[in-house]
Image (cartoon, rainbow, N blue to C red; front, top):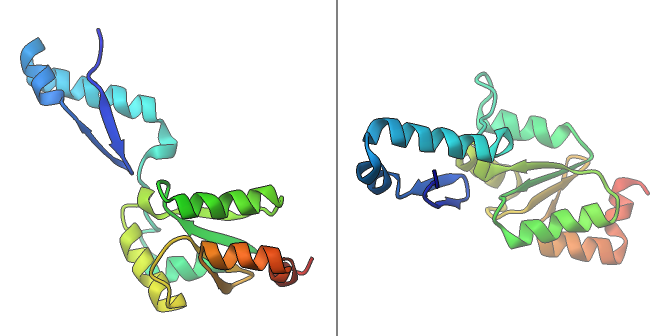
Length: 153
């Protein structure tokens, strides 16, 4: 049996499952089966996550910033985020990457980051707990040597 095409936009899935289900039989069982197949195809890595039930978005953001030398708050579909992640990867600098669009409360975490850093956009990069900035700032810091200096290299 061929499944209808699913369109993945960020972490939102939209399908023409209703039309498919009504033309093929039981709407409920076909829709449930389709959703299950899409979830299995996507795997656990694409499912939404959220911050700890006990942590506020602000506490979560602060904790993550302190947890690693390099922390990049990102969105999976953002080309500037991809450039920043590629920069660190290409320089063999391990970075903790937090994909806000895959989190149930990612917008709240992003709002907390605005309060912390004054920056609304992603990528939002922190080096050893200090705010570096976005993609342009990261690229410039790498070119000038400031990035290596901040890391103590």
